[in-house]
Image 1 (spheres, rainbow, N blue to C red):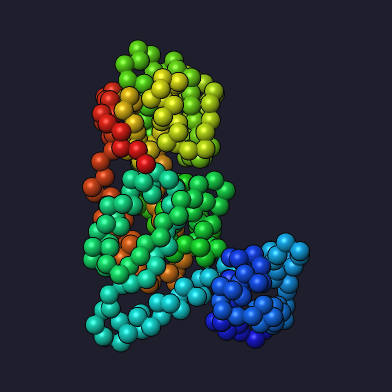
Image 2: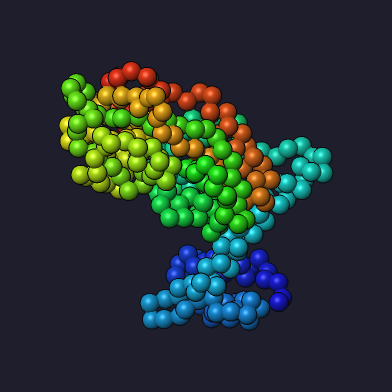
Length: 312
């Protein structure tokens, strides 16, 4: 197979993003025929059809999805190649600049990343973080990294789970679950259970199965902040991790699930190549530093009211 040139990779990424040859051509400042010719040339080199063409545009085939994912990763590395080479040659470290793409689940984006990015951009004001909220369902934030949409993902980690092929995983901290319920309720454990689709049942499944007092959920939602709003309205109780409780509205109290509360790991996912770039290295350093200064309501052992709304 003949190697694909960077411009060919840019065309493939643009067609995938725009879902059509004409829109990709407009984005790149090319003609539609030039884009079509480039895609056909890439398909000959790769030996597979990369896009299904139709009256509604172009959609990547399974082969196209993999090729485009690699194309995004390669183009991202090319962006940082010059600065990395100059730093390795002993020159003055250049100021970090340009985009830093981060995928994170909602509570991490709302309550972990702001302080991290504040410190990072204070040191590197020309850096432009781009945060994308991704639900930890299915491929989650790791899938965003694998597909080349993110340089780093903030992910929930299962104990003993091996990273997907081509990915590098690092643990940041472990957080504890607690029971959230309406302030002043005399029997929190007797309330209906409210849950959300993204709740990490795989991490708490064994604990959950041992709790005879826990009913099946009567209400489910897509977002943990919605669950907390419902709890604050007196509609039930919820089993939630610390990062979620950091955004709890007023009217919520937190009860410990001691003596053996469930926990989940929070970490980062990137690729080995991206982990060597300065932007990602600096971000990981700030994320690790944030472990020591987290302050969340779930760490209170006794029943405690959350005083004021700080939600996302």
